[in-house]
Length: 89
Image 1 (cartoon, rainbow, N blue to C red):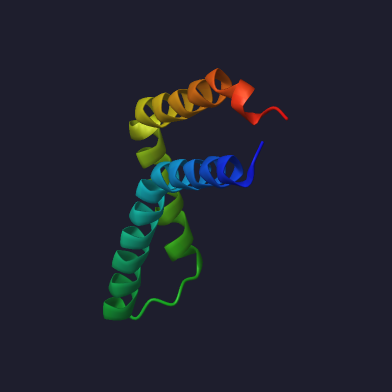
Image 2: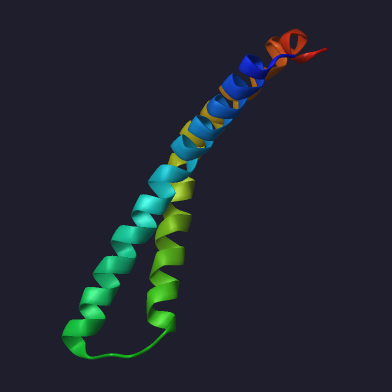
């Protein structure tokens, strides 16, 4: 296995990871920002108020996107296992 193959595998892994985690992080950021604005407007200083809605939103988003998330992960894993002979010595 040469350096080019290792770099390509690492790049594909990072791109797949970012693709899978990106929508969940985006939802967490948007919900966190909305809750922070709401807290600022109403002058509520509750720490758990930011955590619980973000967690619920990420959970709902995960459930909704689960078929796509699993499909993408299965596609990546299948491609990795199919080309396993490239990664040997």
